[in-house]
Length: 101
Image 1 (tube, one colour):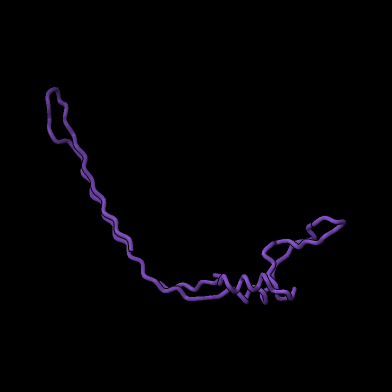
Image 2: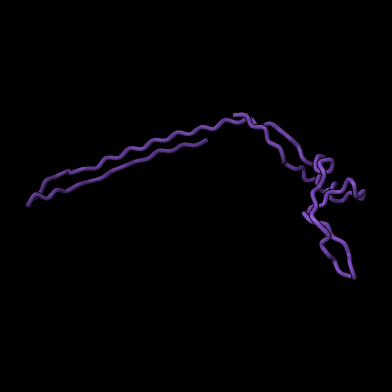
């Protein structure tokens, strides 16, 4: 099975983006913008990092792998021995096998 995956981040690259001093290239890990207003920190709006910023630490790769699954299930039940008064003794047995890799 081959899957294309987008999104994993490289730790060193994301740290560099967070520590960036140029506001146009710096990564904002929050979904809001903030400003100091009247001596307090206030939320000033929603924020989404531009692709030019997130592309510096996000990558696309192809994952190639094989998965195996084997499974088996055996069950049996029923009457085993008839005893007095029309009664019977029953039994049930079962087993399961499962292998994943």
